[in-house]
Image 1 (cartoon, rainbow, N blue to C red):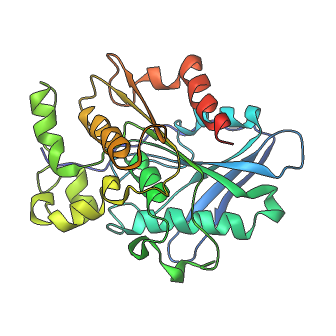
Image 2 (cartoon, rainbow, N blue to C red):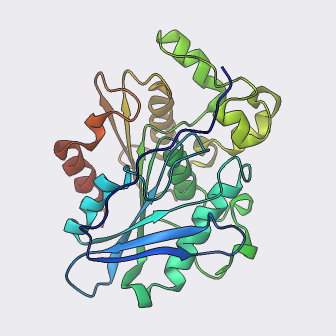
Length: 291
């Protein structure tokens, strides 16, 4: 099967948010480089930033699609919620998207005062391919591959203080064998037209160095922020072993306590179980303990 990036998610109704600033440009290379800021209804802050990075197979999705709605619960917890768009695989290949997200964080810090943001506190949350970005942003502070000074605000830091990774792909070259072993699938991530191949600009088996560079496990070290990883045990798109091995690698290299992992029994990819009130309480509880 060859991947077709024609799928779109419904747009979220954000009319209930009274204080918002939409479609702000954080860089000038592409119209994709835009973000939305949502502020709590009351107070002048400064508010901790919850950065939502949408998924969509590295090829589709939007900062204002329905996946932002659960994260807008952060407004009730005193967060400024920011949805970010970035260049996707049809426009620019790896590492452009991650560079964009880091540029957005730098822009937020540079403009924190005018938008009531706490420049010291940014947490990155992502779903699916956006979770890969969130993990990379959290683990690659100072890695020059992911920094493009031409995107602006180079003097600002792009580090984050916590990461939430919801069912993100980690090691692209293992996905097919893991899906097959679990009786799930289709196992077609290794094909030339797969989302991962389009994202890297080449069939993944032909570019193992790029696969390694796009793998958050490559960058695990003692300086990484705390991370919450959640994955469904019946994920037919991104096998649960991706998150299991990621969490195991963190514990082996950094020790216990830096990573928390929840396996949602029977949950599929992008399952509603991730966005129930119970699970959102879990996610925001994790963030509150590290605020």
